[in-house]
Length: 159
Image 1 (cartoon, rainbow, N blue to C red):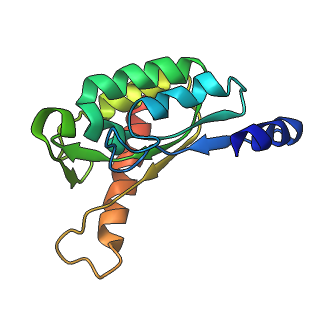
Image 2: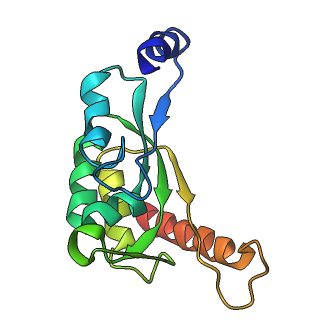
């Protein structure tokens, strides 16, 4: 499919962003090596990632996330970011739990600093937001909390 899509994306300057398999099991097409092979198979500047921090942390924790952000971010291949935190990983604990931004294993400000360092200027999208006490069925308080948290990080980054 990408063989046909990439020339069209290049012609119209459209970005094709690939999300990793969630959950990142090695036997899924974009769960492990498949996720990394996309850039090699399609070296176009129009092909990149909707980089899901939580999903990639599930695959290998903070070191993996920082390495991938540095690698793909320097190449301008991270178009959008799903900004979420998790506790545990498949690689270290054989499982994980999705958490609020301030409650997982990762220091999310450190992640944001790495994104800033590589020149990322795309959208930070809160993702897989856990319900918090008092939430209605649509996690509106959790979403507000996450957006406020991201806005505070961006304000701290601008200082």
